[in-house]
Amino acid sequence: MSKHILYLAAGSGRRFGSNKLLYNWKGKSLYRYGLDMLADLVQRREDCTLTVVSSYLEIREMAAALGARVVDSPESDKGLSFTIKSAIQALDGFAPEDFLLFAVADQPWLGAGTVSRLLDAARPGLLAATAAWGDRVGNPTLFSAELIPRLLDLTGDRGGRAVLEACGERCQRIQVDTPRELEDVDTRQALEENGSEA
Picture 1 (cartoon, rainbow, N blue to C red):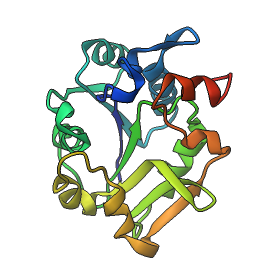
Picture 2 (picture 1 turned 45 degrees about the horizontal axis):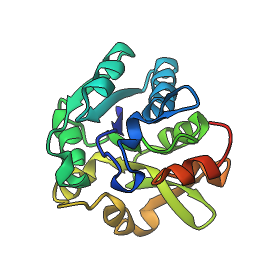
Picture 3 (picture 1 turned 30 degrees about the horizontal axis):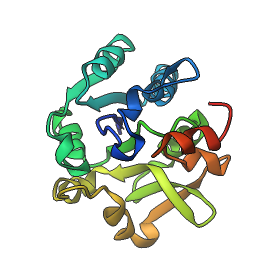
Picture 4 (picture 1 turned 45 degrees about the vertical axis):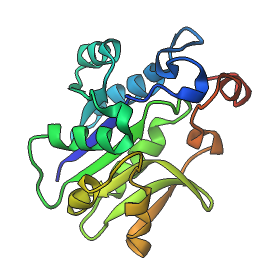
């Protein structure tokens, strides 16, 4: 069983007022919080790989320097589904028992413990898993390779949430340590209000 972490770092964030992923927050670009955490996690585990999907050269170069596979995604401005497809199509095939974990680059408070628990949830019979705080669900998300055809069928700005919901009881909720881990950054105000520490 292989577990493929796919870090989606292609959106610019129109509501943010500038490219939020490249926004310098507390000494480093916003995307680096998730990327650094995931790169370190992959180095400590033998069961997963890291692929970074981005339309931005700076992000791709940094990801490559950290040992990640890098994928350009020039059509990401057309919607999230294009980024997801670029990620899946860049990998070298799948076995039926493999899993894909999608993480997004605008969650600077996401912890390695949550990602590890999602990866550890992968097992035969599980279709999907999602990070959650009580009944509230969010990213990251884990998908069995069985669901790849459904993910490739996504269109426009649709992400994998509809695919997850269709899994019903075969989608497991993995609880995060704090609700802040689920927060994504849409505006500069939200970035500053949601916590003083990364």
